[in-house]
Image 1 (cartoon, rainbow, N blue to C red):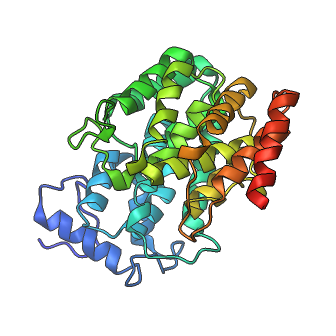
Image 2: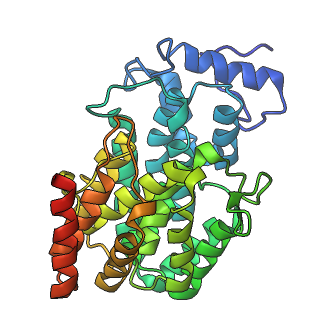
Image 3: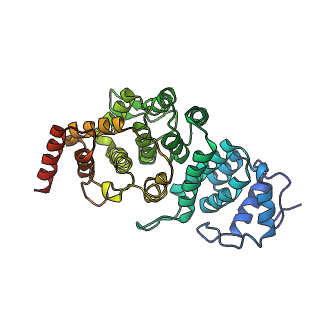
Length: 346
């Protein structure tokens, strides 16, 4: 029997079957526009409702494959994920499913620079809500963080890992594991990213990893020796895009989401996390870590004079203004930062 989009396969996860893969494609195309964005009445679509009612049969691997192999377009996959997640009962599966959705970000159509698709904002907010309500404490956070790190994936646009670190303050050993995974992909002797690395990160992926490194660097339990190595990488000339992203997100955190304090390299992360997401929850950021990072920027500012896509060099001003106002900065440091800011204005 040949399946069409009006029938549900007996086994929704049998992706070795060409027939099932074709069914997923037809099912999605019948319910989305040319870009793959859902455009149908979900409540009146009995087949779609029947599919969602079987959410427990659609595991994360199935969703990851149908999106990754482009059996369905990324926007449709994300819409499906957002409807499946409330039906799941396992917190880890909920978070993994949301992370798979976040990983579709680069596959969406271009957007303007004033905002981002509401689907991604809702995904990021739901992730923050889940972490806040379902992960009980720092010890519980260690468990979830460890499980995600064992997967050796989900480093691109890592909304789940970033949320766990920001909201639940994992212990130093857990953060050491996180930093070591990232640092192991670098050759410090040649100041270069290793081409074949454990987490399959390439140069163009680094900007998407920056939010996680920023929240981890400012965590109360951050291992500062390892944080310093990340800060060192931001001074390397071949990785300025990573550097500007990392430092602007650090400024976003220190400035508590005030858009006057940072320029957002990615609009989704700005609207969904650093401005409108985090600050609805109790977050964990260390004043000591903040001043350590700002001091590094001040000491290395000549190597960190980044330029954004608009040709503007804003990062140094953002970092120095935050340093000048920081309660942990002494009088001499404030005066020195103010002098540099005055020189920048001349």
